[in-house]
Amino acid sequence: MLLTSLNFFSQNKQVLYDFAGLPQTLLLNPGAETNYKLHIGMPFLSGFSAELKTTGFTVADIFAKDNKFINDKISTVLRNIETSDYLKIYSQIAIFNAGYRFDEKTYISIGFYEELDGIGYLPKDLITLANEGNTAYLNKSFRASQLLYKLDILGVIHAGITRKVNKKLTLGGRFKIYSSALNVQSTNNTGTFTTNLGNDNMYIHHLNDINVDFKTSGLIKNDEYINDPSAYLKNSFLGGNLGLGVDVGLTYHISPQLQFSGSLLDVGFVNHKKNIQNTLTQGDFTFEGVEFAYDATNLNYWEELDTAFKEQLSTIDHQESYISWRPAKINAAIKYRFGEKRSKYCYDDTYKDFYTDAIGAQLYSVFRPLRQQFALTGFYQKSFSHKLHAKLTYTIDDYSYYNVGVGISAQIGKINFYGILDNIAEMSDISSANNVSLQFGFNLLFN
Image (cartoon, rainbow, N blue to C red):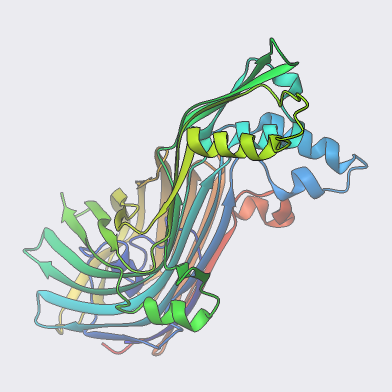
């Protein structure tokens, strides 16, 4: 198989998962069944994905033409957001991928892809403090723990094996080497900022139990920011900040018509040791203003305040290595096949039976810094022939309760085309959508 494709899809690829036997499904489940002898991905064209997602608000909430003042709309958004809302950016580019059937039961695949994965939770307390100040929020504690984000840019070298154990069970695994080009994160922060009515001045401000840790790897070298894009590309291929990970998966036929499949992806870590620049702020500080007492020999009020601030609330820059964990993902699906029973030609010169229709459900989950995120999908799959397939999905997740997706895979001669459109209910007004994704691709198939 000679594979070329261009994909725009979300990190949860619920339409693509276990769809039409496409080789792309091996990255979602290394235990997926395959019926081809060979596939080769064309460099940089075998897969590209991108997504930008939000919860709590949409672009239209701020920029819609509704004759409302934008400041009022921003204030409404800030009032309505929760600390669990977030912004997420994700992109993946497959540089190379290939697969080869070692024998009738074993399929081996290898590849390399670049990935950008970032998530930042909306720190409602800090946004409110910056936007409205503290005068109207006396005795309220603004929490530093809401400052929570993580961004990774890395390259992934991977090799997988899929083994058909028997007629019912197929197992698979994938070994990964991560090479981090950039990591920026701040998690597990503590501390509060509180303003009360003062005794010697109007207000008294308290910074209590502050412990804020900013970690960066690959961003700064020799006290200067790395501005050369080629340096990041170079570091994404065995560039020094390396890690290991694994994927595992299976497909099991409970009966000829009932199938279970599942996978656990990106169980791994990166050890950051090069180009490290971390900043740690710890301590307590109380400030009730500056008491101006005339002293001709000492007029350095602000210098004294600055010195006291640094002594009580110390900030330390250091270059200690650290470990970041990859966002592990779980897929689990149950599928029931029914309808007309047909046969299709396989790689081993035999014919395999298949049913024209299938229904099922899929559960997806990803581990994130604040909490585990879930998506539940129901789907209907239709095979009009062994060369023409369609899939309809309905997904409930953080972004929508009515995400409808549709996919189609068709083959004419040696050319296979597939296209997938997700969240089609929002396509008429993308600015009001929290998530829209599109996938399509071309495959040249050689059995």
